[in-house]
Length: 392
Image (cartoon, rainbow, N blue to C red):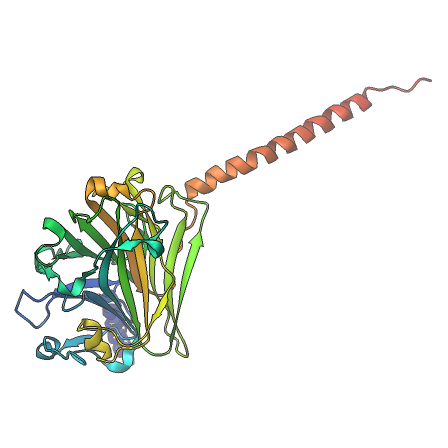
């Protein structure tokens, strides 16, 4: 019967809709070493699904620590890993997505080195005396499975340097995934969407090699073909969410010739020198211009596993921590810096209703007083002329 058939189809459509996340929200799941039982290997697959697309974030400390970011126009796309090949000296092609045609954006961020320099008599890293760098590929990493929290959607890659370095200190890459748009309660109070994740870089107890040491994190960007990068600085008069910080920086990767949206990294120009981030323990954060990298990316890493061994089209950026306030790390032995990674248009801060109300009162009060004063003046002038009687 046509009526019964319509009711069945309507019910099936309703059930399908109920099984999908609401608009603006994603169903997020985290998988440690999917398809592999050796916990000494660190790979975390974060999958975020909505009604029309799937985001795949692949975090790993294999070789050089890195994250692979994949945007697919398919809510059923799946990530595949050839583990024997991934763990071999040549991991090219060990990670792929099915169906391949669903991938609209593919990029990677590789964290290559940690630099340390003497900032006593230098205005910045460009003219400073550098110590031998820490190669993050040589670090030992704890099992991320120990820190994996499926409820809070968080995990941490914690690493220590080669013997004789760091003096029992460690660095960590702490990952947070999001199901919907909101704002972090902890400083720097980044605004995020369901299309982004947060990375927090942490140094804890790393012994400086000088009395005025500053640190620099080197990141290398890997992109698929046909994309254009730009580094932007956005300044605001509002520091409501991050007190004393008026600059937001974002590295945007735009597609050329496709309808895929941009990918981005976004951060505020501050780090913090305590576990409980406060305005008073803020540490100035600088960034270098984006520099093209000649040659191929040294590896191996999960970037090679997806893009191949001859990874090209590279660009590097350095994030330095400390300036005139760099002594905060020397006194606390702790540093944290947060950055968003995601897809689409980067989130943009706007004035909160409270700030808008304050501005309205501040700007509106003089106008009200002027108007009221003009009315009073006109009233008395009119009254004075109305009381005048001509002489017969």
